[in-house]
Image 1 (cartoon, rainbow, N blue to C red):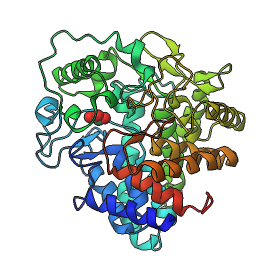
Image 2: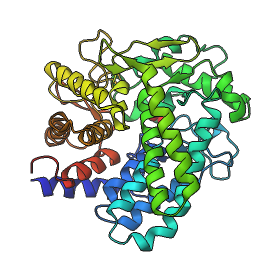
Image 3: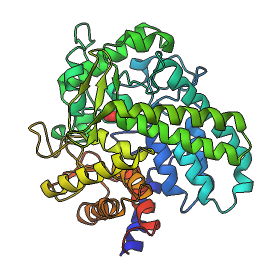
Image 4: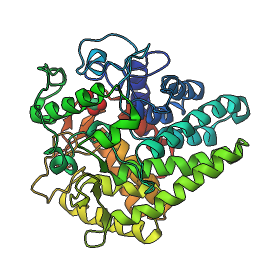
Length: 425
Ligand code: DGY
């Protein structure tokens, strides 16, 4: 049965493979997405490690001169997606969006190299990618942490990957909708509109795109100009984990300066994560950098923080918090606490379970020795696939498959989880 699931997962990835990159799913997302590709490369590495590395290399080939790695690469025309390249208008030869996404690539590159059957043959390619990823990390701390706090802000909810999380609701009220050019959404013709963000949220997403476009996509200006600046613990944990993994990989590859600076980023950032800790709830919160206050929203962003090397007491508290949440749903880990009045089990990031998030939380908790809850998270993930197939996300109570179908990163995570030997066969 488990081998059968792996075979099905490989077939999903192959269907969405465009040669040198994958699309997340046909129709809804017809281009290359940044953190999708990095996570997908891990699943691919179990059946084609050369192609897996290519996935990351294709993404990094579209890095901007300032170091940013964009969140979408529009390799081919497709009118089935909004907002397309004409809305972003970033002036790139191969069009890209103008914002970024969670920095998973550093973590993924190290994992690919650790498990490679021929690391010496891949070494030269790995060094090239390592340097580009490091430039991206430097870009983050230079442009998204201008005051040197150790933590970076996102300036658009799409950067977090958790587009319509309850976490952004308050901060989003500051983003106006005046002057937003009329548009037609395409996502709602591919997926159930009840599973997607609202029209009101879309207007604000587009307001921010128009604002940044009017500033010429100049990253020296965007952070301070954005009315939306939020420090997301999950987003930062991914970046900090990638920094520490890059430090270790750089040491192996003889890149001493990158190793030293990456380790310094990780150490400083992990210390700063303490400012986001909420003792009462036992998880991290987002911080609104414009309003200068913590955002007391019980979302998965504060649990995903376990992906980086937070202190053992914090990892233990997060494990306990997830065990408590388990009493209120059938499948871990819901993207929002099911007891909250804002919880919506089928609407994108306001409640559903996402396998990529489960994978990263479980990885961090396994590393911290919180193995019982980590194994439960992975076992729940596989039960979801058995009940509902390879969907984009799932209702944590009913297992209803939501969003797009035949989803590449969901398939990749199934291969990862079933191949790790950490959960019962
Ligand atoms: C979308 O279009 O839904 C994406 O999440 C934006 O990147």
